[in-house]
Length: 497
Image (cartoon, rainbow, N blue to C red; front, side, top):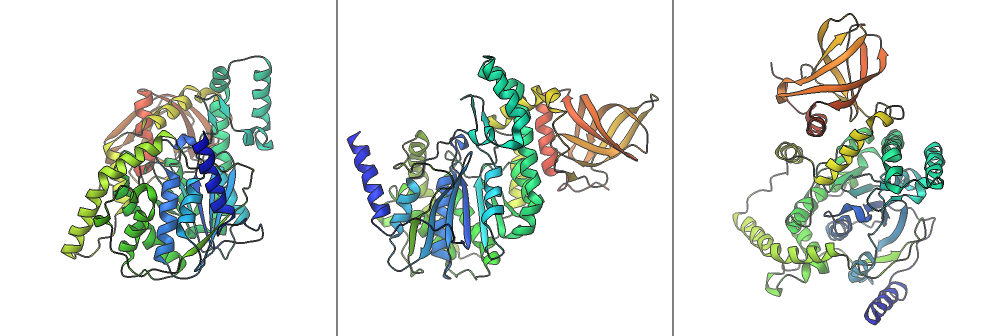
C-alpha cells in the first residue's frame, strides 16, 4: 500500500510540478484523439494505441499543433492537452497517459461523436476515434446500467420502466432481459442520428480506428459520417508490436494528406522510434536492438486537461491486461527488429497496405469473437420486444443481382424479387405493389449464401417496395453471423455476369 501511495505522489508531482498544467476551457485543439477507456474493451488496448499514435504523430510531423487527448466510457474525460515546447520532457506524456484508468463499467459510443459535435471546429485539422466498436451501455455481467443514460431524458420511457422494475424488487438479470435490447437499440438510434452533423462538421478529417477490425457499427458510422475507416486489429495476444507498427504507418499516410504536411523520408523509422519510446515496449528491448536515433522535431509540452465529468486520475494501471501485454511485447519485439532489418536490407519500395482486402479476408476466415456472439444472441432473444422500438437503421445499398428475396404474396403466389438495401435488422426489397404474407429465403448468389427466414415483420410498405424486420432465421445464431458478414461485404462483392 505504501508503495502505491508513493507512486501516486510521484505521479502527481510530475504532473503538477513539472511541465503539466490544467487546460483552459477556451482552448481549441488542432488535433483531437478520443480513445475508449472502458474496462469492456478486454483484449484490445485503446489506451496503448492512443499513446502509440500520439508519440508517432509528434515524432513524424514538424508543424506546431495543439493536441488534445480525450477518454470516454459512459461519459467523457479531457485528460491531456499538448503543445510543442523545447522544455517538455516526453516522458511526462508517457506517465500522464499511464495514469489514466481504463476501468469504466459501460461503453457509450455516442460520447466521442457528441464531443466532436461540441468541441470540433472548422479549424480542427484532424480527429481520431480509437475503439473496438462494442457499444455496451448496460453491462449484463456486472448488472450495471450507465448512470449517464439513467439521467438522460432521451431514455425517459425506458428509465421509467427500469425504475419501476427496481422498485418492485425484480432481479438485475430479469431487468436486463426485459429492457437490455431496448436500451441498446435506443443508443444505436441516437448515435446514428448524429452522423449527418459529424459529416457536415468534420467529415473526412475524422479517422475511425477499429481495433477489432470487424466492427459493423464503426464501419457503418464511418461511411455515414464521411469519415475514414481504419480496420487495423490490435489485440494483446496477437503480436501487438507488429500490429501497432502497421497501424502507425497507415495513420501517418492518412494524416499526412489530412493535415497537408508531407511525410519525412524516414517516417517509418520514426514510428519505430516512437514505439520504443513507450516504456511497455522499451523495457523489453535490449539496448543493442534499439533503433539508431535520428534528428526529430522539437519536444512537446504535456498539460493535464480538466475532465468533462469529474474523475480521479490514478497511478499506473495494474490490471491483468497490462501483464499480458508486457509479456507478449517482450516475446515479439525480436521478430519486429528482424523484420525491420530485412526490409531495410532489401530496400524494396513500401507497398501500401490494402486495408479493405485485409478486412474482407478477416471477415471471410472467421466468425465474430465471443463477445459479439453473446451480444447478438441477446438481441435475437429480445427481438420481439425490440421490434416496436427499433427503426430501420443505417442502410447498405445492394448491388444489382447481389441479393434476391423469396416471399409469398397475400394471394399465395411464390415470388422472388431483388433486394434494394439492408441494415443490421432488416431488408428492403421490391414487391411491385403486392402485399407480403411470408418471407421465406434470402439468397446471395455471389456469396453462395442462402438464409431461411423463420420469423419476420413487415414494418413499412412504400409503393412498389417493402421493408421487413428480420426476427428469426432457421439456423438462428449462425445465420445472424452470416447476416453480419453479408452486410459487411455485399457492396464489395463483384456481381456475377
